[in-house]
Image 1: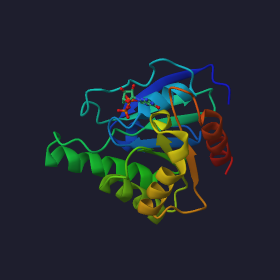
Image 2: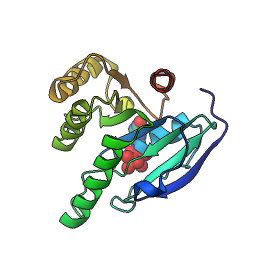
Image 3: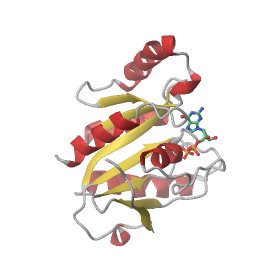
Image 4: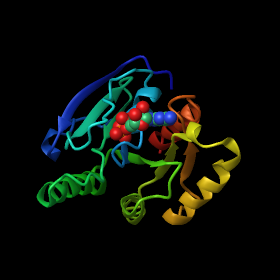
Length: 195
Ligand code: GDP
């Protein structure tokens, strides 16, 4: 998809605030600092519509972006900060679970993991949760530019094994620096919203 129009429509905390449209939605989830904002900005050809967050722990909202009047990207706040209180974390968990488990418009989740590292417990939990609810997943392994090409396969295998990756899902090596994986990501998203 060639994106010219992308705008934030709402930062929602409760289902009543979700946009009242039938447009398909693609949610994006991952640990804080994984490169989620950079991924979104790369896909929509912007420098900083989705805010790149070097300071974790700020936004605990679901941010809905309207893309080309065709679909919504739903930016799920990054998980895995140590500084958030237990109460905050529980609230966050409930908000995300409600959205992921109940939202009719949701077509797939882009689950971002860092290609350099084995997935965290939270990455694994998120993937298993999505599989439990039979939500299609597009696993995007970020920061591929930081790993030599000859080692990509090895890192991909480690991630897939830890996640118990379902071959029906899509796995994409991505870099917001080289833009590697951008076209593949759009293809996967376009296939998902046609379902
Ligand atoms: P978020 O917290 O998941 O939204 O992560 P950001 O998009 O803010 O990225 C976190 C940090 O990783 C920033 O310093 C980015 O510049 C860097 N980063 C993100 N994607 C890439 C990538 O593909 N390659 C490299 N080398 N750095 C990246």
